[in-house]
Length: 320
Image (tube, rainbow, N blue to C red; front, side, top):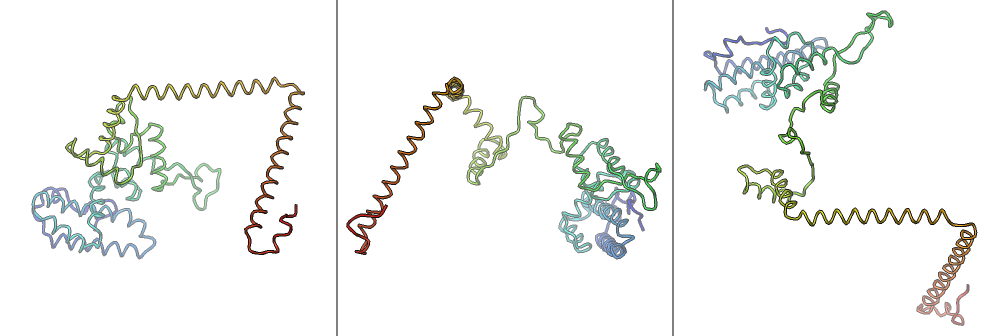
C-alpha cells in the first residue's frame, strides 16, 4: 500500500501504459475510495489520510490520462469508470490530477502540508515561487506554545503551519506589494501607460457589444470592442471634450472666486452692519409667519364653506 505523499504507480507504468485495463484501473479507484472511508473512521488517521489520499487519487487519474493520450481508453469510458469507482465528479478528480502533475513526488513527501495548500499554488508556474510559498506555509508566521512546555524557555514556542486562508492572505498582501506576480495578469497590465477599468453593464448592452465584437474580431471580446469604441470617440470628439473640460474648470474657478469674495465681505462687516442684518432677518421672519397664518385661516374658511355641515358656518367666520 502506498504511504503518505507517494505515487501508487511507477514511472514505467505511467509512461508506457502497456498493461492498462479499464476494469483493473476502476478496481484500484474503488480500493482508494474504501481506503478513504476507513481513514475517515479514525480521528488519529483522518488528518494523515487527507495528506495522502488526494495525491493517490491524482496519480490514479494521471495513469488513465496517459492511457487516454496513448488512445488506450476513450474519454466517455474514462469518465464513467472514474465516477463509478469513486463517486466523485470527474472535474473534482481532474483537479486532483492537475495538482499531482504540478508537484512530483519528491516535492510532496518532505512537506507536512495539506493537499489544499498545494492546490492553491498550482496557479504559480514558477517552481521557485512555489517552493518559497511552501516554505512559508510550512514554517508559518505565528507561534503557539507546545503542550507541557512553559514560555520563556526558548524551546517552549513553536511555529505552526499556515491554514489555507492564512496562505491566501499572505499571497494577496505580497501581490499587492509587488513581491509576487499576479497569477492571472491581463496583457494590458504589462504595458506602461495603460490602466484597468472595471465597469458594470446591463445584459442587453453586453450582448450588443459581444455581437459587434464578433463582427470585428475573430473572437468575441466585448472589452476590446468597448476600448476601441472609446478611443474612436475620443479621436472624433476631442475638441468638444476639451471644451467641456475647459468650461468645467472655468465654472469651478468662478465658484471658488465667488466663495472667496463672500468670505472677504463677511470678514469686513462692522458691528453695526451685523446688527442691521439681524434686525432685518427678524423682521422678514415675522412677516413670513404672519403670511403663513393668513393663508392657513383662508384655507380653513374655504374648507368650512365647502362642507355640508351647517353648524360649521357661524357668521361666515372662523375662530383665530
